[in-house]
Image 1 (spheres, helix red, strand yellow):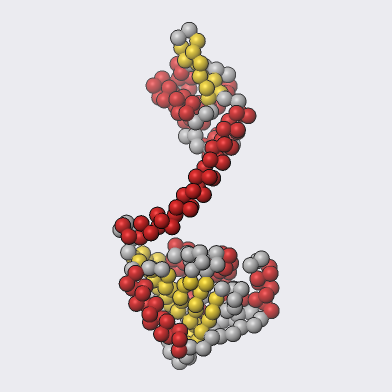
Image 2 (image 1 turned 135 degrees about the vertical axis):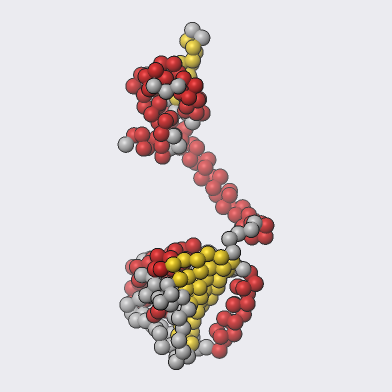
Amino acid sequence: MLEQHLISMGLTKEEASIYLELIELGSASAGTISRKMNIPRSTTYNHLEKLTQKSFINQTVKRGTKIFFPETPTNIIAIYKQKNEQMLKSIEGYKDASPYIEQKLTKKILKPKMRIYEKQEGAQQLMTDNSFTKDSCTSIFWPIKNMMEHISADFLKNFNINRIKNNTHVRSIFPEDALIDFAKHPYLASGKKLRREIRLFPSGRDYPLGYAIYTGKVSFVSSIKEGVGFSIESHDLAETMLTQFNYMWEQLEPLEINLPEIDYFIEENKL
């Protein structure tokens, strides 16, 4: 158990073993540890130097020989707490710079242009990989009744809770004759607090394919018969699809949904 904790703190398995052996010995030279653990002396010395750099052990010299001894737990904890605080500050600094970095990466790095996903797990992974950007708006054409054959209700519930907390708005077009029971699935309904507006596409047509338009990317999920989904990174495609979507959106009437289950869902999940 202790060895696993040490590994989680950044030691290798070999470094953790030597550190634990040194605790038993109290202090020792590289040669002594090498003989005790049956490890080549040069390898042992390298691990001891790494342990020194990581502040788990210290060293002194006696009669011209380096002697290594464990640092006290109090000092190790204090050192790693300080490192953790410094790391959190660095993460915040990096987070502040991330919009600039993302902008540069979008322009200069050649990313994968297309990814394919299969079966139910694939459809869910597609949604996870294309997570909604904070404070953004995503446009979706979604034959929701058919899509729920691909994606579990629990996954959709948790996904939408995170989306709402992320302040991501969704414009959804649902086929009029392929709706679901919104009282049973309130997280898929419309409303200001749910960050979703729904408009209905006329009935009498078959829609085996759904799609979602993000910034610079479009994702598609096919019918349960084919069981395949794919995402394409392309600003041109996303802009073209969005223009078509906006044209449909302007022709359709909003769907107003007022159910007590929606209020309960919002209160239950503190949204």
